[in-house]
Length: 201
Ligand SMILES: N[C@@H](CCC(=O)N[C@@H](CS)C(=O)NCC(=O)O)C(=O)O
Image (cartoon, rainbow, N blue to C red; front, top):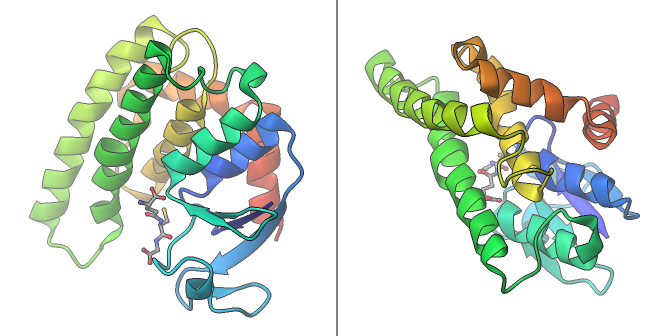
């Protein structure tokens, strides 16, 4: 398998999951400005949507959309516990979390990267995101991981998007449970190895 990624982006989430599962894979860096891969190809020939992450399977098929990729990977090894088995209520709960992270935190953060937006608009997006963090503070004050007692693919995703707070004027210290969560997930060997691999290239 090949994971097309760009450093500091949402592709870190499937990257972490690949390493948590101990699967063999190659990393292919994508320049999100030029849309060229590190080996000189137009990334849009891989993913016509033009954005990371994209997972190329050994048979040539390409899977996109982070939440779909991480569930595909977790299902390759159901014993890993990274996702409950498909068709169970617990799996639906995990999908509820993945959708929350995708639409409320990931998509909710995206406008904050747009420095062309007026400060009033940015403040509006920051306030909306803060209210989602209030909710997460409550949940993660009661449990260590999003889906309950153990690490799941939803945690790889939430950790990834929370990492962007350092690019905005959002201090995670306002949400102590969230800050402790980031430290806890960030100490996992697979997470450290993923971060190292993305910054070493
Ligand atoms: N819906 C996609 C969104 C992916 C996405 O937002 N990718 C960003 C990085 S976090 C990107 O590559 N943006 C470049 C672009 O849109 O041109 C997913 O969930 O995988």
